[in-house]
Every structure is written in structure tokens, then in C-alpha cells.
Image (tube, rainbow, N blue to C red):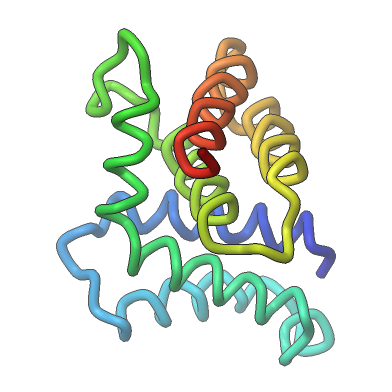
Length: 143
């Protein structure tokens, strides 16, 4: 599993989590991670650096979800937070977590990877929307 694969997995898990938000217990989060990781063989999962990254990003995003959503809400212009597509929201949440909490990942990498994910999983407008929102997130967090 590469870092890009791990980031994609994190977005997919957070996407799934958005449909089961009624249970935010640590056990629930672990079940989502384990469920996703069943698609990988043991050589890809294990305790690799990417698997550790995946677990950190998923756990961290969920544990800081209210703060992340408040940041995203402040950065979304002329758009209701409730109207965001679930895929865009998952991508934004993971990237915002990386920008705010992962000092080992340059902000430009987090934003670029989010835009690439938006090209794959979002609508035609998603890449530019994600880029704009994350640019505002960066300015808000790093000022």
C-alpha cells in the first residue's frame, strides 16, 4: 500500500463513516478500518508505515470532526455545509486534518492529493471547489 493508497482508503473510510455518524465510538471506527483492510492481503496491511498513517488519519479526523467541520464551514463561501456532496466532504475532512495536525506532510501535498481525489471521486466542479476551500483552510489555520 502506498501513501496515496492509504490516503484514498482514509477518504473512503471517512465517506463510509458519514453514513454511520450515529456511532462514533472507538470500536465503530476500528470496525470501519478493519472492514476496509480486509480487501488487502496481509503483506499490504500489517504494521506498515502507510497502514499506521491510515489509522492515524481516520482516528484523528473522527476525533477532531467537530473542529474540522467548523473550519470547513468558515471556509466555504456561498455554499451551505449541508449541501456538500459526501465524497467532497470526506476529501475535505481528511485534507483539513492533515493540514492542521500532520506536520510531517507539507500543506501543498495535502491540497494536491485532495484535488486528485476530487478528480476521481467528485463531480466535474469538485477539483476547483476542493482546491479553493483548502486554500482558505490553509490561510485560516496557518495565519
